[in-house]
Image (tube, rainbow, N blue to C red; front, side, top):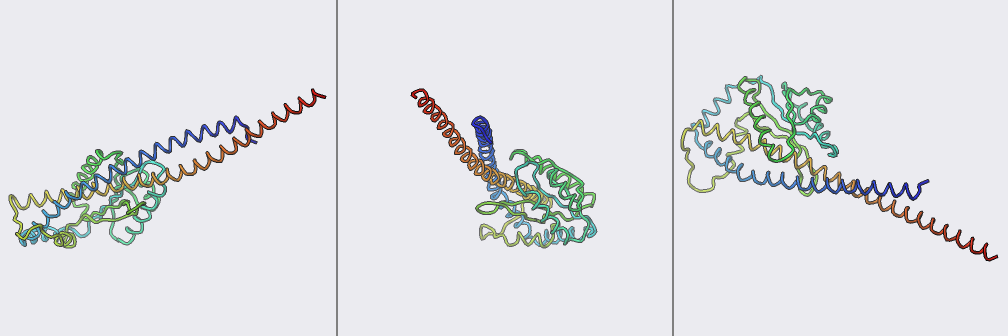
Length: 294
């Protein structure tokens, strides 16, 4: 049976945990804000890159050159897969649900795959699902660290493409949903074929004047493609980190609710036991007084 002293210790422990949970909840909410701001900041830049690619694809000469380059690629190359996971705790089924989605998606693609994981935890889950990863990247812990990560991924991807190991590239990550929560998504970045090109032909030019290409056509096109890949990967990573912190925020909110209920129950038990102890002491005093009176 609990004593007043043991209940007091439990109340102190629960209060300390509640303080930690509130702090983690505030940190998660703050992180969500900075990652969401970084994604919003990319929208205008991504639109600028899209308009640049739209301008180039309006040139039939560039289109033919680009199409011929794509057609010469080896169709038996590997499929590159990049999976953005989480290495921090208190995120629920963040990695598990993403692993299930990756497994279902990749099983419909018959070609051989080379998988890179961002995070060791997701790599272990992918291994349990039957997929071997050839490269593991560290999960960034802040917005400023994303640029370095994407730079490393692009260097690795360029090396693989130059060695003609990879001609197709998919990225998988969790994306925040409107309101709350997240959902796993897949995006194909490569190859830069007709399907990829059509995504930009639907983009309308901002004026009625036809766009013109200035400078070296091929070099500028490659620069725009490089920026497109960078922005796409940066956005995927930022959305993954925002989803991770959203999952942690939800976990902290549930934990905070449970702790508050526990504190309320402990407080009620403590007050009842304390009142009972006071009543017993009063009864002893009254009984002693009556005995002395007699």
